[in-house]
Structure formats: structure tokens, C-alpha cells
Length: 162
Image (cartoon, rainbow, N blue to C red; front, side):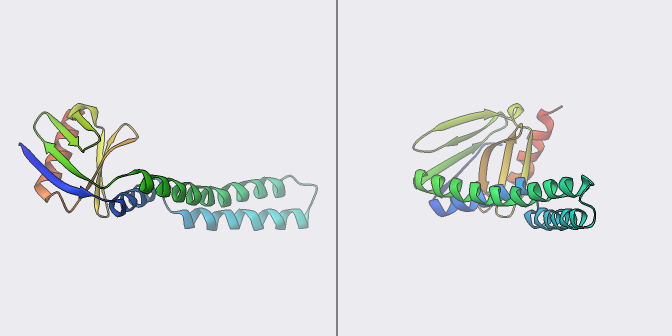
């Protein structure tokens, strides 16, 4: 397969890509908040019923950790989105998909990545994320790719792991 795809990268697209990416690494922040509240109130209950036991402090500590994690991720994501939207210029992106590699080029950079350097691909909302280890190597809007392109990318990545 030799295919070249072009699309316009905008600040809105960059923000949407970061939002989708954070949803993949955050998991379910509301679940952490609920768990944190349960641990926190259990800790208060144990401290009020028997202050000599250490369980109350342990539960308070776990509750605080579980409550602060989603809050920290929210502010980190907000700052990163603000910085990336400010720093990412509008530009034309050209993606070349071949049997040997995936090439992504913009006016600022050119990257040619062999299929064996990738470890996985994932479709999240309107993006296809391609990973190298745990690092996001490429974020491609799904509107640019058709299903046969996505299947080809996933097949090449899975074959390169063998």
C-alpha cells in the first residue's frame, strides 16, 4: 500500500486530540472521586468511633490521594491544552502510509517511522492513536482515514511485533 493523506491541523483539532488522549490515560476520574470520598468519610468515621486505631488515618490518607489525583490531572490537562493550542500552529499535515513505514510531515517537521517501532494502535472517539511503547507517536483524525487504512495500520503494527 502506498497512500498519501493530507489534512489541515488546527488549534481546535490539537485540543480535541489532547482531550481524547487524556481520556485514555485518566480512565474514569469520577470513579476515583467517588472512591476517594468513600475512603475519606470512612476515615472520619473510624477516627470518631475509635481514635486509638490507626485505620482512620490510613483511610483518610487513601481518600486524600484518590481525591487529589483527578484534580491534579484536570489542571495538568488544562495547562497542557492551553500550551499546546498556543504553540501549535495551523499547518497542513501530510501522512504517507507505505508497506515499509509511516511518514508524517508538516511545515515544521518530518518524521519517518518504521512499522517495527510501533507497539499499538487505538481508536478513541474521532482519533486514531499510534503508540511507540507507552508514548503517543502519532495522532491521526479518523475522518482522514477510511476503515481499510485503519485495518492496514493495525495489521502492520501487529505483524511487526512478531
